[in-house]
Length: 143
Image 1: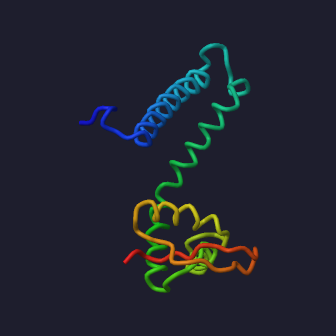
Image 2: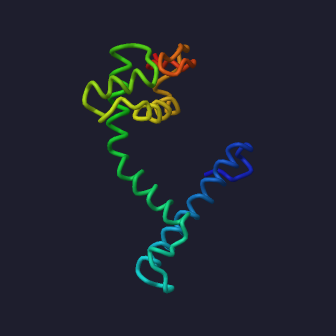
């Protein structure tokens, strides 16, 4: 068990942000449930917009969790087999394998970020994307 005084500034800020975020989401969920049940004379039409969009984002996030885990595993397989690739190249391979409905880059990019934060992959350089003409990161499995 740690006290707040034992954490450095960044750790303390991250913890406080997490606690505030958790408290806000819990309160929002209770508010939305009360509104949906008809309490306070509110209906779905007059629930504050920011609360409704928070709920729909959370529902989408929860529904996508299993797919994200599968996609991370497949991305690791792809990078192990093929070596360094860009997010767009990974997304194209995911589509070729029938994992995603299109080769849209955003099917791979968030999972690459998650794998990077988990220490499973690293950037090995950069190259010019043929579609955008911009430099993009090349990702590889951490050795």
